[in-house]
Length: 505
Ligand code: C2O
Ligand code: CU
Ligand code: CU
Image 1 (spheres, rainbow, N blue to C red):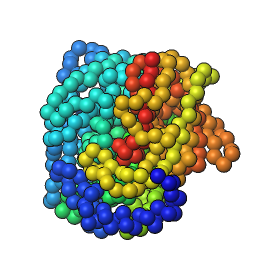
Image 2 (cartoon, rainbow, N blue to C red; image 1 turned 45 degrees about the vertical axis):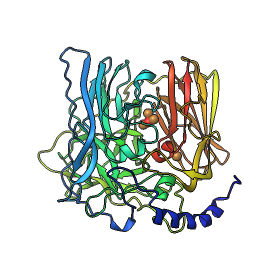
Image 3 (spheres, rainbow, N blue to C red; image 1 turned 180 degrees about the horizontal axis):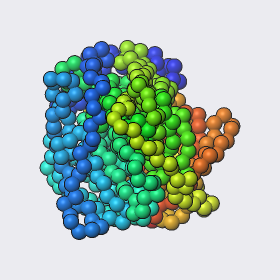
Image 4 (cartoon, protein in one colour; image 1 turned 60 degrees about the vertical axis):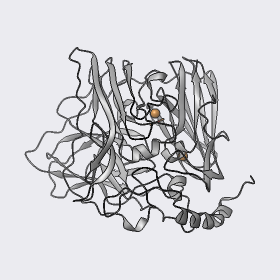
């Protein structure tokens, strides 16, 4: 096919949009049929108390083990007051229950896929687990079937991770319908002092109409990744967190949205970054704002003032990620606005907790002995997926090294134990958060417009945003043999083929 310029496709898109509108080709199978219209979004209440996510109960009393069961099934959630929304949930909860285990633990999770008519998996995003326990799309659990995931959490992996389904071409749909949960690995010895109040903030977004019905995917969603009309924290919109004046808060933020770039600032209180995807930094870093791309996590300390009558907003800031429009389609997403979370100070004051100057040591990965390049591009082609994206429409495809995902093809090969440099080159017109399974990596350089910059500090990451026109260089070492996925974590891109397979030998 002749490559069209972006502009030509904007024009060509007009007829595609008309097709989509009459054919209903973008609606999902199953309970979520219907063509999305941006106008009928529901208004969700704000200011309700922040919910604590339920904890997954450890059924094993012996020390050093964590055993539990997770069942994925249909559920009902009340997002719009008085209306029930059909969702998917783990153990009846959406977001799913939080898993809390400790470094060195043997973890065993019995997974029961009770989702009608769809395979699923559980992927342990960011955790260094063996390849055959990582819930890859090549290891589906059929509808009605079960399997057990088993792995040992290695030393020094304490951090904030998450789990979600990863079935072939069904990830975006199953995550959007409600399947995601937090996985916290506690350290054996905690470098942080006591007295810090910790909160887990799982960010999801939702698109429901005024009757509470979850709406289908538009062509714009398939190209850009779907952003809901409502940004939720632990299932609620802009919830209220009560904190003591002077309290030192630890916020573990998880971006579990399909495609939303969550850029935040904390009004009225200083923020300190203490951790990223793979756990603590070497030393705390003061920050004014942060851009949390899909699938990324941060661990931040928020120091509450001794007194204030004004609630403190974790405020949303706009971010331009290269949204692509086609005439006649759903409008551009609402700009990030308002607050993600609001903190209200009340009760008796608490003394501030002083952070240690050093949190842990992070050794730089040594010089690479091999290198790989992933070039991210886009082209016009047929769009589609297994279920929600019934296919048959022209639109933008996103590729890695010129190819779409093929579960039967090995794209890259690495030797276990080798440090490699991966160069992620974004030659497309949209930002892509790139994720590598199986290990944590270190970003060493970014290059844009001929200017190279090095990060000011080392951090363990499993997902890195690669802005359009930018090259990111990172060092990575896989340690366990097997097949590993690498992909864009805009889940609609991943499902439509912006993914590859790395064989570690
Ligand atoms: Cu969180 Cu392969 O993904
Ligand atoms: Cu992952
Ligand atoms: Cu992408």
